[in-house]
Length: 127
Image (cartoon, rainbow, N blue to C red; front, side):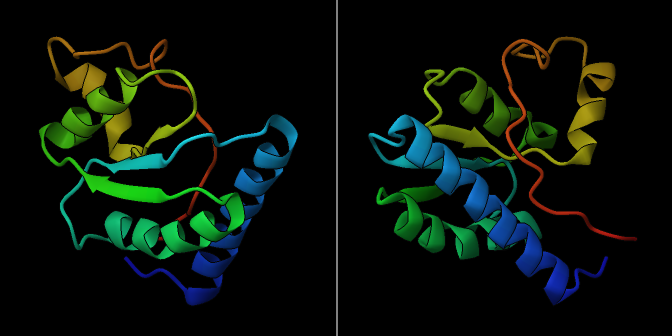
């Protein structure tokens, strides 16, 4: 998989503007933001959010922390995000493969339709 630098930059800047506009409208954030990456450190998702976090910290005026919680085809990390207070200060980062988990696992530890809310498309990767 190849990610072009223009597409990555565009996605990151778009995400920054989304966060900045919601911060201005709602007085958000009021405490540090935790981004849960449900994949191993050093992978593409981790790298993207570690690049994005310092810029979001600047824009939002609050610390943005990237936390890796790999395992279970992203279920472990997203379970933590799903069970966090619904105040917008914890973000879970799934990818397309996460959509298959409810079909492949007998019992998910959370309801993917009720416990998670989509916020933003961060990137598109071509094959």
